Length: 82
Ligand SMILES: [Zn+2]
Image (cartoon, rainbow, N blue to C red):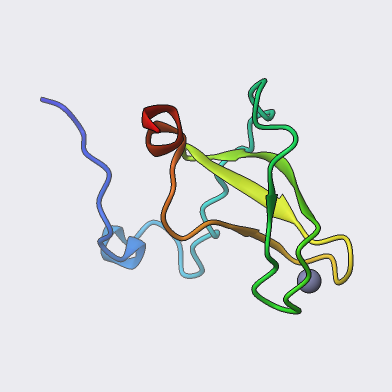
Protein backbone atom coordinates (compact mmCIF):
# COMPACT_ATOMS: atom_id res chain seq x y z
CA UNK A 1 0.00 0.00 0.00
CA UNK A 2 1.26 3.41 -0.90
CA UNK A 3 1.21 6.14 1.68
CA UNK A 4 -0.13 9.39 0.31
CA UNK A 5 0.49 12.79 1.82
CA UNK A 6 -2.68 14.51 2.80
CA UNK A 7 -3.78 17.78 4.26
CA UNK A 8 -5.43 16.08 7.19
CA UNK A 9 -4.68 17.62 10.53
CA UNK A 10 -1.73 15.90 12.16
CA UNK A 11 -3.52 15.90 15.49
CA UNK A 12 -5.75 13.02 14.52
CA UNK A 13 -2.83 10.63 14.77
CA UNK A 14 -2.46 11.43 18.43
CA UNK A 15 1.31 11.20 18.49
CA UNK A 16 2.09 14.50 20.18
CA UNK A 17 0.17 17.21 21.88
CA UNK A 18 2.04 19.88 19.98
CA UNK A 19 2.87 18.72 16.47
CA UNK A 20 6.05 20.08 15.03
CA UNK A 21 5.54 22.25 11.99
CA UNK A 22 6.41 20.37 8.84
CA UNK A 23 9.75 21.48 7.51
CA UNK A 24 10.30 20.87 3.84
CA UNK A 25 13.99 20.86 3.05
CA UNK A 26 15.05 23.55 0.65
CA UNK A 27 16.98 22.39 -2.38
CA UNK A 28 19.56 24.41 -4.27
CA UNK A 29 18.50 26.58 -7.15
CA UNK A 30 18.70 24.71 -10.45
CA UNK A 31 20.94 26.17 -13.12
CA UNK A 32 19.11 28.60 -15.32
CA UNK A 33 16.91 29.94 -12.55
CA UNK A 34 19.54 31.61 -10.41
CA UNK A 35 18.92 34.97 -12.06
CA UNK A 36 15.17 34.97 -11.61
CA UNK A 37 13.64 37.92 -9.84
CA UNK A 38 10.24 38.31 -8.29
CA UNK A 39 8.23 41.03 -6.63
CA UNK A 40 8.12 40.88 -2.87
CA UNK A 41 4.52 40.44 -1.63
CA UNK A 42 5.35 42.26 1.59
CA UNK A 43 7.01 45.47 0.43
CA UNK A 44 6.63 45.38 -3.36
CA UNK A 45 10.36 45.44 -4.03
CA UNK A 46 11.21 43.96 -7.43
CA UNK A 47 14.67 42.77 -6.51
CA UNK A 48 13.88 39.56 -4.63
CA UNK A 49 16.30 36.86 -5.77
CA UNK A 50 16.05 33.08 -5.83
CA UNK A 51 17.45 31.37 -2.74
CA UNK A 52 16.29 27.80 -3.28
CA UNK A 53 13.56 25.39 -4.29
CA UNK A 54 10.84 23.93 -2.10
CA UNK A 55 8.40 21.42 -3.53
CA UNK A 56 9.22 22.44 -7.12
CA UNK A 57 8.63 26.09 -6.38
CA UNK A 58 11.34 28.68 -6.59
CA UNK A 59 11.77 30.41 -3.27
CA UNK A 60 12.71 34.07 -3.31
CA UNK A 61 14.12 36.24 -0.59
CA UNK A 62 13.52 39.96 -0.58
CA UNK A 63 16.70 41.96 -0.13
CA UNK A 64 14.79 44.94 1.19
CA UNK A 65 12.75 43.39 3.99
CA UNK A 66 14.08 39.83 4.22
CA UNK A 67 10.75 38.09 3.57
CA UNK A 68 10.97 34.67 1.99
CA UNK A 69 8.19 33.70 -0.39
CA UNK A 70 7.44 31.68 -3.49
CA UNK A 71 5.40 32.43 -6.54
CA UNK A 72 1.78 31.51 -6.15
CA UNK A 73 1.47 29.91 -9.56
CA UNK A 74 4.55 28.76 -11.39
CA UNK A 75 6.30 25.57 -10.37
CA UNK A 76 9.47 24.39 -12.01
CA UNK A 77 7.35 22.12 -14.15
CA UNK A 78 5.42 25.14 -15.39
CA UNK A 79 8.62 27.05 -15.98
CA UNK A 80 10.17 24.19 -17.92
CA UNK A 81 7.12 24.02 -20.16
CA UNK A 82 7.27 27.59 -21.34
ZN1 LIG B 1 10.21 42.90 0.70
